[in-house]
Every structure is written in C-alpha cells, then in structure tokens.
Length: 109
Length: 123
Image 1 (cartoon, each protein chain N blue to C red):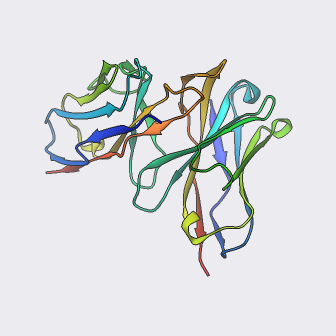
Image 2: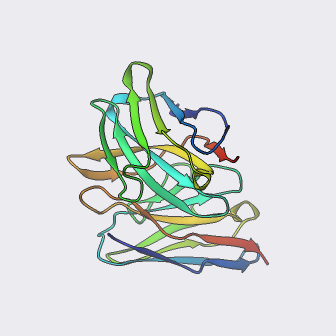
C-alpha cells in the first residue's frame, strides 16, 4: 500500500506568514492528490484537487504543487481563519485505496 | 446544493450493534460513490470503505474489512455504516463523503462531506 508522509506534524506561524506543508508518497502517484482543511469540531473541507487545482470558492492564497512523490500545499499569506489542521489524501492505487497523510496542525505564533 | 446529512450522535455499550446513516441530496445519489472516514479522538483521518449506491458495489480498506459493513438504500438516497458488536476502540467521529470513481479509477475523492456522527462506546 502507498504510504503518505506529511511534514511537519505541527507548526506555529503568524498572520501574514507564508506557510508550506509537504506530503511525500512512498511511490509515484502522478497528480492523484488532494489537500483538506479541518477546523476543530468540523468536517474536513477540500482545498485542492489533482495536486494543483483550486476547489471552487477557496481563496487564492492557497495553492498546491507537485507530481509523482512530492507535493506541497502553500498558504501565501496566513489569515486568522486558516489556523486549522491540514491533510493530504492520495487516491492513485488500484484496486481503489485512499491514504491520508498524518496531518499538519497550523497554530498561532 | 449538494448535501450529505448524517444521523445523530450515539452512545452504546460494548457488544451492542449500531447502524449510522448518511442521506444525500442535491445530486444524483446513484451516480457517485459514498465513502466512510473514521477519526478517532485527537487523531487523523482514516479511509474505511466506499459504496456505489447504484448497484451496492462495495470496496473496503483492508484495515476495516470484516470489522464493519457498508450498505446503501438507493430508494431513499441513504448510505449506512454498521457494526454487529461494538468495541470501546470504535469510539470515534465517522464521516461520510462523496467520491467519483470510473472503471476502478478514483477521479475525484471526497468533494462533499457529511457533518459527522460521533459514536461513543463505553460500559
């Protein structure tokens, strides 16, 4: 099975900072990766699909990049409402298997 | 508007059975897969399995095969997750989410999510 290693597991940042989160796949997954944001007590929300496509309605400060085994979620200028936990999700496997990364908690510095 | 509405929180004892639900609306329920995701207290997200309500084709994560049963009733646009004998370790939040898969290839996973169902198992 494909493993997803997400880093860092947590980070502290200030409003306005540029934040980068990375996911590494244990084998190549083309661009079959999405990024999700989860706030406490809420369901996850998809931000990015196909590694770099922005979900409709998601602010443009969020961007995704990468292909193959290394992927990045970037928040260009962190806003107060962005403090949350972020997860990557790969869906490349056949038969169908989905694997989440371990999560990155973004906290206020 | 696409919506997935899940059943309410449950408190059960070890050994009891349970079936929770996820009702879809605002889209063709039989044209998309529904997946279930577990989140244990303070932990990350784990994929459990998926079902295609159109023909009840079901695929399980190896980690959950035999531990739960996923089903659907397309006549009422509802998917289910059930346990025959709960354990304390089943205590978690469970989410349903929509997924697009074509000929065994996942095209668009988990674009819409339910609000979650908290299951607490305690003696």
